[in-house]
Image 1 (cartoon, rainbow, N blue to C red):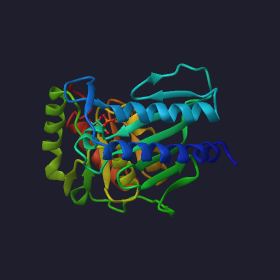
Image 2 (tube, protein in one colour):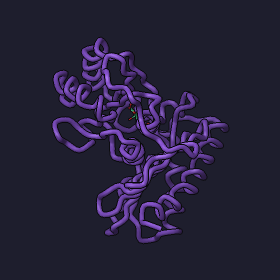
Image 3 (cartoon, protein in one colour):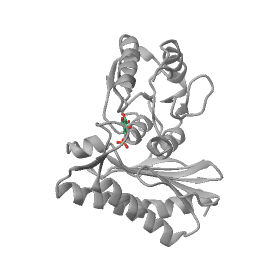
Image 4 (cartoon, rainbow, N blue to C red):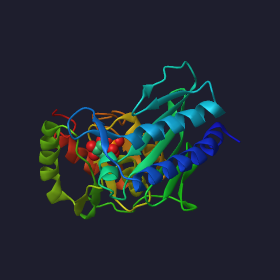
Length: 265
Ligand code: LIP
């Protein structure tokens, strides 16, 4: 079994148990326990509990591996394998009990993401990918949207926790909205990338994402045949993540460049 499939075989049961814990804690009621970058950037007890459970499971199976997680940071271990974890992506949806939040777990070897799983903890939907091995959901191989006309594209995006960034993102969207079919703001980047991978969205873009928001979902999208990039030749990262089929990527990319989408706060 190659490294990617070997690491995915470990990631999937760990992510399923994490999703179960998130669901159970959601059912018991959720309150913010703290705020992070802004007053609206909340963390719940479940974000922390799920991350601790995943870290313990990874440590038990592969004690030498490093982990980068949203809530407890980077374990700073010198290891070829690093796990990139968002215990609950879409925390605001989780807080409001909107069924669009996910456990997102990716495995990176020597800096390259080779395996990823995203599980919508509310619905149980599961997306997986292995580098060079394709992307799958519900036992189906994914291949993205066939849409080649930006004017007919249903595009997903998101907004940051800081008001000045949201104002810039809204101005970009105001410039783009007349050029596309419509926009969808579902609130969880990991799921948005997977919806683009299966063609439920034609494309997705967002500024301000952290590695844990897009590592696993980005591999699912790329293995479904989408181009997953930053702007102007950059890799996907905090300045911008754009995911679109090759026939659509250029037009969306160029419009986002024209609109200074990666600029601003
Ligand atoms: C969220 C992202 C979403 C973005 C939110 C937030 P979190 O991650 O998944 O796409 O629009 O501002 O960053 O904070 O729920 O892990």
